[in-house]
Amino acid sequence: MSSWTNFLQSSNEYEKGVEDYLDKAFSTQAIGDQITCPCKVCYHRFWHRRETIFNHLIVNGIEPGTGGWHCYEKEMWHKRYEGVGDEPNDEAKKFYKLVEDGKQELYPGCKNFSKLSFLIRFYLLKCTHGLTNVATSDILDFIREVLPDASKVPNSFNEAKKLIKDMVLHYDKIDAYRKDCMLYWKEHEAATSCHVCHASRWKETETENQDDINNQPSKKVHNVPAKVLWHFPLKPRLQRLYMCSETAELLKWHDEERDKDELLRHPADGEAWKEFDLKYPNFAKEARNVRLGLASDGFNPFRTMSTQHSTWHVVLINYNLPPWLCMKPEFLMLSLLIPGPTSPGNDIDVYLQPLVQELKDLWEYGLDTYDAEKRQTFKMHAALQSTTSDFPGYAILSGWSTKGKFACPYCHYEIDHHHLNNSNKSCYCAHRRWLDENHPWRHDM
Image (cartoon, rainbow, N blue to C red; front, top):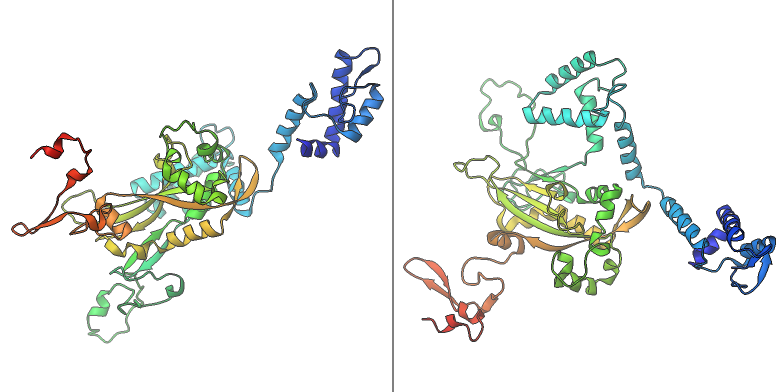
């Protein structure tokens, strides 16, 4: 509080606050033309006139907690807090500018749509109904003819797409070898063949498999990668969460709003979270640092069981959020989309490389992030604290085989395994050892 008082003493707000305080104090407490002086030296022990008290308060400062002044101090603290901190970083400034531009009326007097909401809704309809770019541009031309001349409807689909692209978060497409040997990424980005098996990076085309009978010059062939990994960068998505003041406040719920009554309602109530905080206290002391969970599984995108296809997705869960929000679809972050037709199996680590690199950077170096709620830029770090998967997925993510003799990741080498020769299957026994000593099943033959 003393540092706050010292700051106020050198400002015009402080002098104005002293004047306001003295007006109220002399109107309610004065005996004659004097009141007790509330400065740090006098501390209500001596009576003085207004001019003397004013000089004392400017030079000595006011005693913290003084009645009447305390309310003014809280008000000024709130005002200063609203404007304190660094300016938004470049990424935040760009985003806020796009949002402000998008808030323009679609046409004068339009109440239902802004320019941005119209574009997002229109783009959604295009994607849902599979409209071509040409058809989309024609529809935009028709809408511009119907609406007033001052409307903000884009002139073409390319213009609309550019506006949408600047608003949404980007993704990267990284070529991969069809047999999951490697990614054409970083130092291998320009490679044309696999450095493991030396096979081609590209799909074979018909012109490569047949002789040129007419001996005519072949047409220009565009190389098509054999497999493509879709990577949705994590860093800008975490930054975007803090650019909204309401979301930024929710991201601190686990530390500031959670009931700490030893009941388990959220991962922050668990022993793993508490043990992590004890092991890494520097990470734990900043409530805005992000705790993540990872979930992964395969699915068939073609909605039919007659086609065997397995595309794998890797999703990140933000555990800073309260339990009623952290599992909502809008807060789940798709990080990787690994194409089929087969599961990556134990080679999933090849595809996890971009995500692992991001997580290492966020853990070791952090990321300058603008907090819209506190209006300041801070160094945000992130940590992956847990993974979620089914049992076969556990084997793929962890590398521990969940089949055969040592299938149980908890029992490890102490498992009681028997191989059934006739059925060629594995049988796991001795489960009764986990029961209480007096449990009736221990003696049930």
